[in-house]
Image (cartoon, rainbow, N blue to C red; front, side):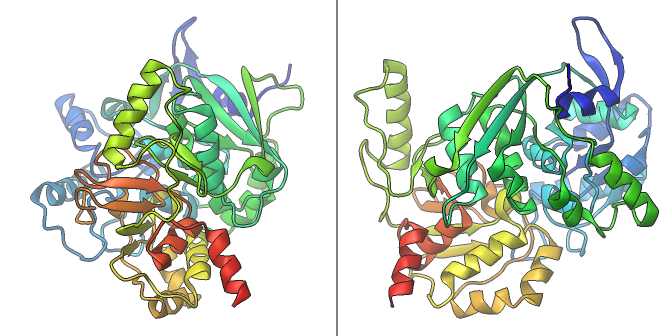
Length: 469
């Protein structure tokens, strides 16, 4: 019987297996940020041990980093960043410091620098580590105690998950993005539909996706319960990684590509579960509730209560009460207060190109606050080099400094209580973007269209009206 891509990478990294128990898994790359690592380093000190392989570990602050200043006013956030820097110096770990050209969101910088490569096992104390699976790696978020485990041993004790393949077949409609695909899958799978599985994405839609799109898709795997979301590496992957700072060079690159080309599920591989979706069914999406699976078409309506079970009805009523929406409501045309482009989900250059394409020739709606935050300094440099910053400025938008920004309320970019933000980030949990804030998740195209109209807007309709003028 053939092997899945996940099985191939997993089996190549097993140091030891316990019958009917966990495996000791060798870890190729550990990423550290300022929020989940302080206790891990304290554990090393308590146990009087060092970092086993510091050259395999890379760190950077991102969650607490402001997008409009080079200093952190919040004492807790500042302390976390300073502690990360101090720990990295003490234990000999490379840290991409705040304000340097190497800094940014760890899940954006890792792949763009070639630190995340096909066939790797990658972990970080952050749930959206699944992002790195887009290059053809097993990438998982882990807890703080497990961060200490990897620092000390370069290994991790893990139970092997089951495998699931999600195919998306066909060709996407115009203005449907990877974010829309992910939101559609989550609405169908629910936020627990892939719990206990390692997901591999496949099918024509995935094969034709850009690398940025694949990173978005893998990023959101955690939001349906899977800790990892892999995509088989191919020519798109290799072209994107070639020449990056930490990728192999010269003859070593050729050898690596040959090895990576074998990283795919065998034709006779058997998955524990297989699901197929079709591109024809996917249109631009938005969320209406307080979990990423509570989504509808941008021109659709909020579900009614009548067909739901008692538990489902109570849950929906609670979500709608918080969001200030009602059953059967059409959300298209709802006024928005804030628009956010960024996060490890949609903070890459392709996302800024898409946003600029929509807003060109328009102007930001009065009364709308817009935060456009690149995921790395490299992305910000590309924005300037391509003239995207000028297009955005003419439309009334400002490009801020790299940061996690309004993805979560751990830095100054907080959405005020009661205000509605349409966002390219990954989570719409209660208070995620600020205490009492309300979040609608969407693609960069939908966020851009909404930013210039001031209401939730179908980007297809805005583009159609543009072409008729």
